Length: 530
Image (cartoon, rainbow, N blue to C red; front, top):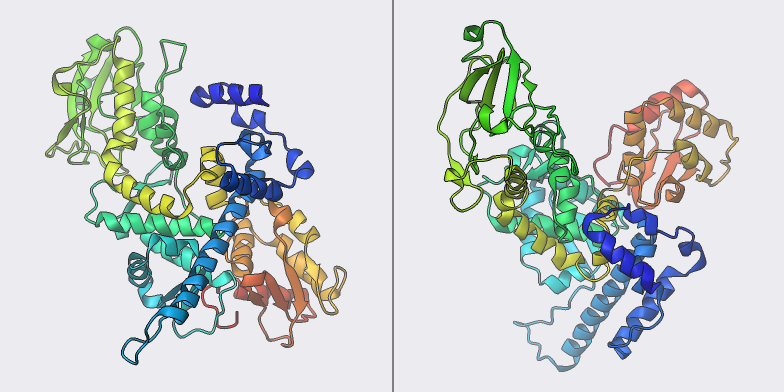
């Protein structure tokens, strides 16, 4: 085991082999992971300097599913501790504090309660979170929508996270931006929002994980690497910004790498044109990239160690006619549909290193240039926003268990997966009342369900469970219950989201089942019936 631990440590830096190669998938079937972790915690409290014999000392053996059990066990222990602490404070307060009509005893709620209005979700939530002590975040979260009867057994909480994060992640909210080409969201480095807002959004994301709630966040792997203090690399830039990252791509071990995308500062593009005069001053619909890493990179153009962060309109830096090609250097942006004229505007340059404006890129330092380019886009340009987000996130769920995760595993824990196996869902469904798998109404239900589009099937999951994502451990762990409701043929199905229960009327025709079910899944807001 110690030898495996050393090999895993060596492999962590560059991941020569996939981290999953160290998994022992059957381990979770042979070992009580919860019990092993609890014993580890007890030993650390009693004998902090003794390692002991626990599988938790070798977390690289656990796959993502096993680590999710560790994370949930750790959160459950912290919740229990925080609740006991609140209850003890209440007992001490009742026994020893001096109470008067002007200063009545104000007991501490053993849960973290958020009371919010639907028409003011963001402000209500962030205001209440700002007034909390970080220790308060360790208590179980309960959500109450003003004016609604819903009791939060998990479903109301899911809806809050879904609606709230959908609003703050929207580019119009000015905190995050959606990257064209990847559809991932990233920090808006030019936002006017206070950094404390980013801290609170980080806290919200941490609360979601801590309270076992999957959230639909379109963050790239780079974010989860940064949260785990892992270095971000060129591959991460390619995933987030494919039009920029792919143009910087270098095939390690080879000197030459052909480029395949357009629109990047300091890179070179060419277009075959017999009459260069008709090309100069115009942006064509498609540019053909030449080889940045070839030996003639110096003679094609001159570029320095700086990056444009100013006007984002497409600008022509200079063109040069070489052997039947126009070589055009562009400032960092993407070609936009419908744009034909070169647009000029003010530019603002940031040096990628001290003296960067006077340091030319050449074949000897081009790798350094790309490394600094990646570092600026993924680290330095969003340093303040990410740091605030990270502080909020780690204040809730940071710790030694989180440090055991690989970034891919953490990403799967946060956003779930989309490995939909609806046959597995049907197989794991439980029926109550006089319903069974071969009841006529149930036959109609599954026929209609399997004929739905994937979009509508995801809407059904959202309607029934509060999320259209699947837990990291897959569909086999998604258990739903279908039971008859007292409503007649004209009634709609009703979902008890907190418990994944579907109250399904006894429809006598497939057509009526289809009509009513499709109407029901369009309405996923509100818990008046939950």
